[in-house]
Length: 70
Image (spheres, rainbow, N blue to C red):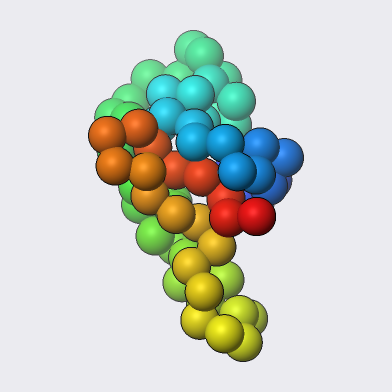
């Protein structure tokens, strides 16, 4: 849930995968940046279960990363 927390704290601001990795897992984390995509997919699925209007709360900003909708 640290990923969701980071997105909510920066609501409306697009964050790159690298920025999310640095803030959530730490700058010394070693691995593929696409792991963020997998975690975003899981968060979206969980949020959809509790969102009455089917609005995507986590939006993809093409060529940049992700942002939490305000």
